[in-house]
Length: 267
Length: 339
Image 1: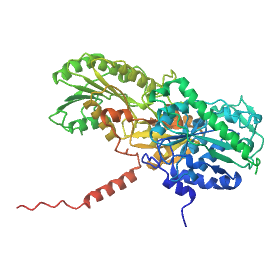
Image 2: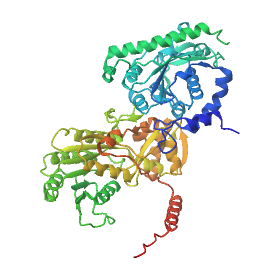
Image 3: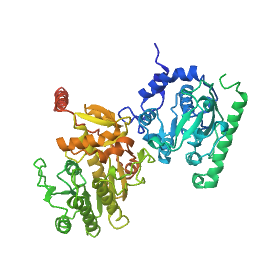
Image 4: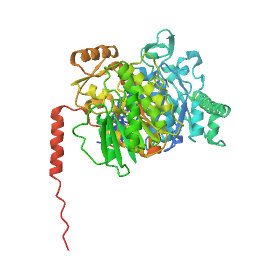
């Protein structure tokens, strides 16, 4: 009997062991394998993720996945993670960048760390890019999941830090559109006065469990934001803002194209 | 090169002295400590041991302008710090901060000393949820006035030494990861020495653990080089807290975070352990790994030797027997035939 998908991915994906089976941020391949196997039914049967364009993800070297963000909890990030590790050969583990409050969440912080999620600090991302890793960033941050349902798939505030790093480390940026998350677990209310473990608000969802919407993930052609720029241009706010806008426009275009072609929320 | 080592009676000081004596470039070592000469520190023609209480500025002055000048000392490695986290007060502050101040001031005016290597700690970094997992030398320091004296002293001493950058004296401040060794003031050693290790429920942060051999190698390498600056000294063991507990063969029990502090306070009162949860709470939630690239580039430091875990006596005995058997079973080297 062959190895499970998770075991194969955890075995073949490049990994920097610090001597005890963990990398410097706490990534643990056996935990990753278990998580991939445990969630394969959710990926394949519940959300029926339909993916196109994964060939745009470079096989090696630093690269940044930049995606839209929505839904009550980061199900879109989880589906993107599962999609990338399954559709890259050799498998690449996308290092998702989480918000600052995540390390304060009990259980979640440890679970995320074992899967390769890192806290969203510049130094963490810089270190990973220097090591040639694949980063997954949601530049909307918390503003994406926090937006009202009527604004679904409208890209919110767009952070520019990824563009600076893309120019500095000559890392291609792959725009990604994730469709299905916004309707899967819509937000009814935000209790802003209830700030558990530093989270910006307590979300109240419309349903007890996420709805089985049909997820679509589209990868665009890589953007080389560093083209025509030198290393020190990463310090220039105007150049960085323009580069971030280019990526934002590419993500928005991809989102609209995917929305236009989908047959329905659940189909 | 002639080197003076303070804190020479501590495990780290002894390891540094032994490493220096094994280094061909070192012609003389002046070992300084408050205590009398340890019995296991063998006499060597290149070694002189001096008992000095560095908490008194006059003693520091006399040491520098007496023995150090007489032996034409080139470099000073300052590792003497108070080791117990339970103690506080003026004497502790004098040992941790005032001794460092007096030494660095004296060395900067000294005719023969041109190199000063100071032992600092990863504890000086401020750990917050906004802090990076990988701490580099530019990360913010802990200036919280409510921090325990253990931390405040270390931050003050670190900055006191850093204030002398740019002068004639070449200064290297080595911010070391937790040195896991007995009698070295290691909070983690004390924590892992207990049969049961309580861990905050839901958290399993990454720790950076330094072995005695690697620490000594870093200090000797820093003394032999001339680069000034702050350098992180990471260890060869970078692992989650649960893994450190498992390596030490201890029982790992997760308890809700708010219970950790009272339980460990109770343990200190009842059993006299030195481990203080308030000193380690942030580290036990957020972790903290040192980025050692600067030390690698400046003086080629690479952590290589894994730490020795505080395992139970029966396991140490089994390990020792296994090691002895491995040595005994090695084939005897054959004598070369004489022609």
